[in-house]
Image (cartoon, rainbow, N blue to C red; front, side, top):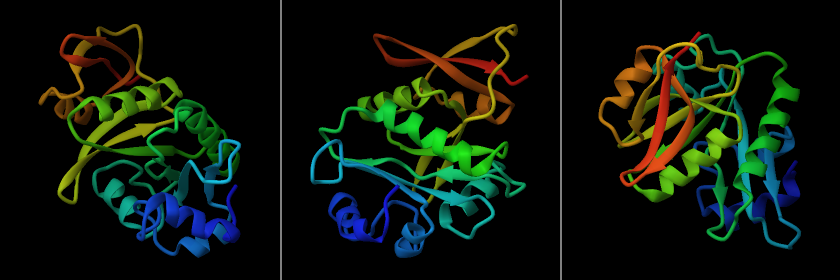
Length: 199
C-alpha cells in the first residue's frame, strides 16, 4: 500500500496528471487506496488505485452509465500504470484483486484497461484474463474505448462458445448481450477470445 510519502514517486511514474482517472491523489493515498510495486528497487515500477463505484470519479460515472456496476456497489481498479520494463503484471493484478476482495467483501470488483488495437493491448488483456478476471464489456469512453473486466463472474462452460478476435467489430455486441470471455488463445491474426454466455 502506498502512502502520502509515495506521492512524488507516483508523479514520476505516471506523469503530471497522476494515475489515470483519479482525482485527489493525496486523499486516495491517505485512505490507503493506492497499490504500488517498487519491484525491489528505489523507483516505483507500477501502481493502480481502487475507486468506489458509488463515487463521482469520471471512471465510476462512465462505467455506471454503460451499465457496469449500475447499482454503485463495489469498487473499480484503475488502469495499471507501469514502466515499459515492468514484467510481473499478472502478479501485480492478482495482488490487487486480493486486496480489493479484502476491502469489498462480496461486492463487485471491476477493472478497466484502455483499448487501442494492437499487440500491446492484446498482451495486457491476456494478463488481465490470466489473473482471473473476465472480460465483460468494451465501452466508449471519451475519445477512445475501454475494456471492462469483472472479478466475480464467469461464463457458463456448458454452453456453446464462439471464438472472436479482440479487434472483431462484433465483440462489443456479444458482450452487450450477456456474453463474456475468460479464456483466450492466439492465431495468425492475433488474440482470439472464447466468448460464452453468462450463467
